[in-house]
Image 1 (cartoon, rainbow, N blue to C red):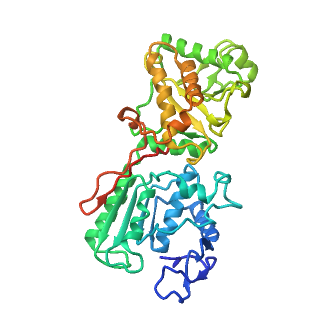
Image 2 (image 1 turned 135 degrees about the horizontal axis):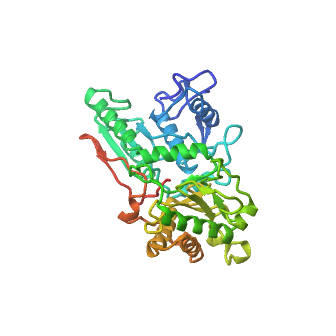
Image 3 (image 1 turned 180 degrees about the horizontal axis):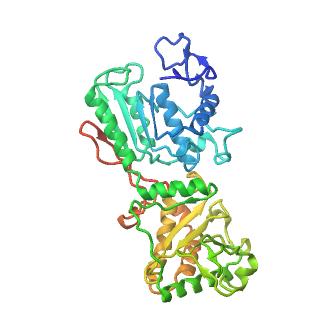
Length: 421
């Protein structure tokens, strides 16, 4: 359960969770009060493996102290908005424990780590109501005298949809064929539940590391056809108008081509004059996609406390071929972690935005959506939506959760769900 296969870079020490507490072991850390001495080195070691050229990790299985480390990795992955240990799809804990405080040296710093969590403290992570959305399987032995079942159950509350398997044995990983089938079923289910849309978003995030798409759907998307001439003209007119109305906030993500089919470099003066002007034969590449920063100029903000910390929070708009006779795809772009902008708050904001779009179907609606987002924050929506739970209509746009419990697996649902996007 410790670093049996690790290099000599990992430390040796005594682990207070091991039989024979005075025995010298190779461990991921040894505890000194609430400090895990050596944790930083272990996280660096795993990060280096994770980011190596030939490494492709889907999940983690940890036993005993290794299960504790797996939980800390999952927590960092979730709190950093999946920037740390990207691509993690599931975690399995055998004889894990959650009845101890988080280590005071949990948050990684130094070379190789970005500053996503630099402004936060371990105490804030400990008291956060964030639930980790990763599929998780928790294995515990009813006869385990080193880590009692109660200690293993204590970590369940950290996960949105934990699944448990209790076996009659002690402090070990059961390997009977029927139990192995439970592991395999869980892994296959967790990996299969990653929809094509999730994969597309992961690819987009990998190519645009400073932004994230808040909305993820589990629906399979067919290639979008170009709009007809009338719809295309309405879309282009609205896009150009918004670029002139919000010259400092507007960001075009799709392309404009000139008469030779070459991509046109859009400059500020182009926005002020109209994106489609300045040359014959210019045309938009469909689907048209752009973003508008939601935050108004500082002199228009009454109370800074009502707004998220990211000044770059933007509404991203992607037109469907039928727009404006059908709502556009509306998402949020930002760089905040889940401690700064909870998933429930994102979903509540998106609900307000989409409601504005639905009210104006048949007409250009994006300006109304921008002001709906501003109204959401200015009316105190950030604080009011901490425990927001999406209705079925909006839950369909959330990441597909782990389901399909094997026969011998007991599934436990948490009371609240914080969407990860």
